[in-house]
Image 1 (cartoon, rainbow, N blue to C red):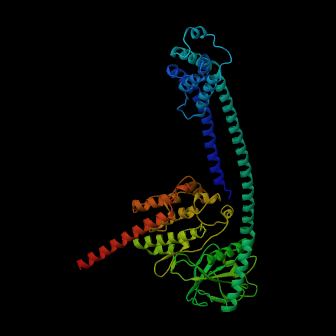
Image 2: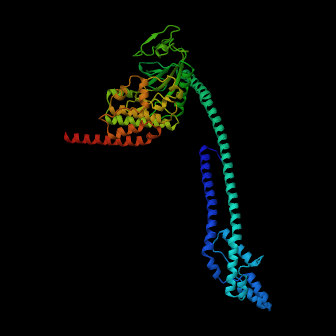
Image 3: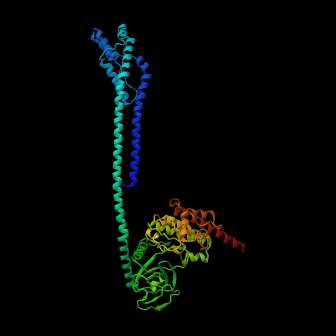
Length: 531
């Protein structure tokens, strides 16, 4: 059986419950013995005295006075009574057996108290038997029963001690199991960290170089066109055709150090590994240009894709990517992707109908849910990282798989309005994407790209970060419907556990989109009838 923390906790809870029940039984049994004896002596004394009980000792004494043995046998048969206690409790049964043994085995000493009365009454008479029974009951209540109860109490005390000892032993074994489990888990985590931090990036970089060489040999480098956009770490160009992709987009990335090489390799690896999804911008291929900026290449960052001859040893390409000192190497990674019309930020500026905004929001939710199903977290959901195709459908792009420590080292550039509070501490899960979607949905519902007024009041990014930690969120605009505002509030809740699941968001957006399309159809019908 696999030992897990939850199983250990379950075993501990069950043992504590059993331990409490056993102690309760031990305490209750001792009290029940006392109450049972008291009740028996108080309530059944007269009944015992009235019963037609003829004891073996009585039979024997009567038989000794008879001359004929057959008569003695008849008396024994006539007066022998088997006393059967109605209770099934072992203690009561043993008490009755002891009474029978004492009564049938003969008294070791004569009962002086009723001796004169017995001599005055005829042996075998009803009064004579009643007096003998009363004497024996008094003797048992004073001596025999006291010894029996004392023995039972000592037995219960021993049982309670054994229960407590077993409980202590169980707890010690549980602590030992927990210690061993923690050591095993720590060892596994160390191996995982080594795999993720050392071996996985090396294998991913090796796979990146292998694919790049293969694509370079087969299809050559793409001819770059005009600039489509740029981010913090790369520039995107258009390309008329490369291999079987026409047209396509080429994202150029110039790694500044080994850490960025690792991140690019992992991004390429995970994107290729998770396969195709209609709401995710995939990467078709990669290439590496070892002489980027030294040949007849378009100058990165120049609109229109102007071409010029660069002199030998030029690092214009590196400078255009924002590197302070160019780069440690002029090698450039080229990622081949599908061409898109624009990003969501540009689309909002151009203007979108309400049903288009709802459909884009639904597409983004589907893309995020797919990433989460693959065990991935985007960490940077915002309008700039959502692309719109020619059909007006949205796709999530710019997958960011940086380590959580990167959030604390200042390598995250840009405003933190889309970042959940826990992202800054490095202790987070996939719910940070839910938070970011809530802010993105605010922009979609507002129909503008202006920063929320509550965030504009902050003088610096540090002030904005503090405000987000304190619970400051975008304001509710008059154009928001209660349903849309409820989705936003549930997405950006401060406690990650209180945030809504994206599956519920998908259902709500689907219903809202359907209603919006139905309303549009009704309006079209009304306009047609009017004309």
